[in-house]
Length: 321
Ligand code: CP
Image 1 (tube, rainbow, N blue to C red):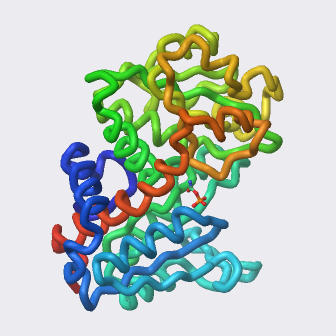
Image 2 (cartoon, rainbow, N blue to C red):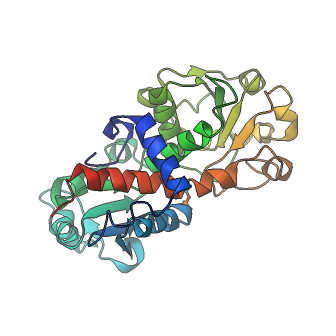
Image 3 (cartoon, helix red, strand yellow):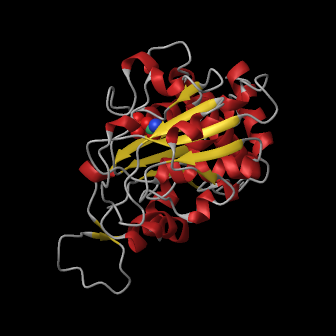
């Protein structure tokens, strides 16, 4: 594996899941694999789980992790080719990226979309330009459109309940929120579950919240939440803003907030959320604190997902400078 930007970078999902679970069982079994290698973690947005789990994963493999809060501590970057840089941007990505390439063996980047211009966001300019100019493996710590480390974690977590049934019913349900939220977690979850192919996969949301079909194709879209949740084995709760009416909040209907009432028709469903979560807006306290909530297990698995990805990249040899 050379990069980790989407599910399409992964030759074998099952192999990666098993790798992650083997690290969960024995975190330090490859503690020399990343010796004398350095990983750069660039953040343009806040993060708790992604930042900490990736640092721990790197350390477990013997790597040094350097965190750079680019949005607060770095120069403002320019991305436009041929730009006359007489405005607020100070450094062109063409100049900055090769420096990261010189300092690090693997480069990880976290950025969010503007939610103002769909074309710009969905073109993933920052990630693609880093890949173009840095000349080293790039790992997404969440981009404008996808969150692959989260999705791999989600697949790992569902795999830990493989005894439920061979092909569980997995439902991604939209939940209310107080502000516009990126589509990336939902896009990515849909992309990965579809590629995984081991679930009977449903997505439910109010009309107007249809995600980009490039990610959802293969899932059943059901606008009736109660119908969608019927018989569910896993319920993944997430808010996202509209893709069609880009970045807009179209519904504040709090009947979509997941409560114990909603779970009556499910198959004793396990409850998932990527966190952070707005309690009693997206999910009720009762559901989050209930025995079926697996959100902490899910967040803990972020370490093993990151460790498996970093290990595969190192073993792939493309980060040997
Ligand atoms: N789920 C997730 O990415 O969490 P953080 O934003 O805290 O990293």
